[in-house]
Image (cartoon, rainbow over all chains, first blue to last red):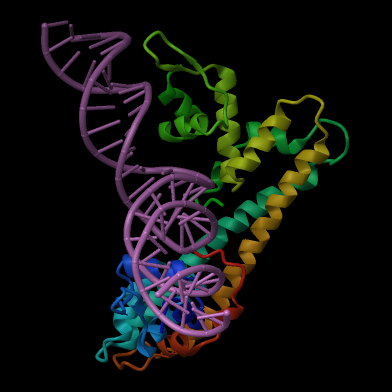
Length: 140
Length: 140
DNA sequence: TTCAACCTTGCCATGGGGGTAAGGTCAAGC
DNA sequence: GCTTGACCTTACCCCCATGGCAAGGTTGAA
């Protein structure tokens, strides 16, 4: 199977399939005489695993951990759970930051008349405010 | 005032002060004979504005819009509000994606025994699952 | 004069991709 | 056998926002 089929079946782009190989996340597939990547069923399963984990927001490093646990028959499910729980905490932290931003921004928006006049509390608060309580930095 | 003082007063790093100048976000400050950046009170105000907006998650491009509105005395507060509301929508979209991830991940974690045995529903679901319903992609 | 603390520019790295170019390969149709 | 188009390869550059480091110049005080 060539890369396009493997990518389609796994839900990744050709680009990212190559990228995951380059960074050592996945097993390099066999090559044809012409140098084309040849994917086995097993390769595609691994790619799909990566795609699913990415969709849940796991980082490349975390997926590397999950992949090695996956291929280790002596793993403890505890170890898998720990990775997942850690990621869940990261998701929680990001949500909290977004919520703080949302709260502050919503308050500012509600104070802005939104008419043709130049006076705008949003600009005023951005000039003066001590929004510094939005911490942690997960901007944008 | 040199860059370190300007950065400290505005709440940015020296690095980012230079970066925002490089990308054309802020007014380039005056230079001393030796080439040192010399920041005025006005410059520092602009930097602080940028810092506050970044803390709320506005993108560089959006902050550029806000800065030009800020320095335009004929602006309509409506225009400012539109930028803020658009950013709020982006925050909402990201929160929804994070929430979907959290929901799915939490469900998987709850099904994992987390003991010494290798059987782990997290791994199983990552292999098979159609998590494809997590859309939009705002990973990590 | 020396020394530390500042400043400058330029390059590399991160993560998780997208794009694009220049070239090789393969298979079908003529 | 040759052309054509769809595929494949590697190798670059880009985004955003930021950190770090290196090599060199400047300033000010002891």
